[in-house]
Image (cartoon, rainbow, N blue to C red):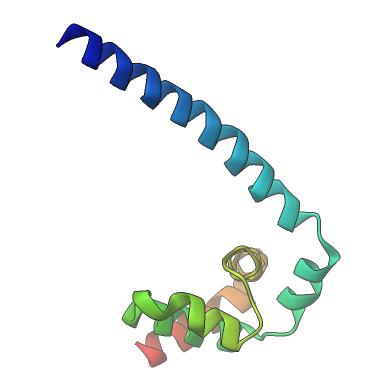
Length: 101
């Protein structure tokens, strides 16, 4: 029993270390890409709000909804963050989100 516990703990530690390296690399890579910046400027705050509401309604179809707009999850997140920097754009996003909900 003790050997099994040690083996499981070792496996969990290796997986945690492996995932940490992978997630850091994959998270930083898209944000440095010029395509990310370009994609974020193509959608208005209203479009992003409507898309966010649709994703909330149908979370299983999130990838499909994003790909229809030509976005990845990271691009969508970056676009929403950019909108949130401006109070006026945030208000427009929120209104579109509520209207689409």
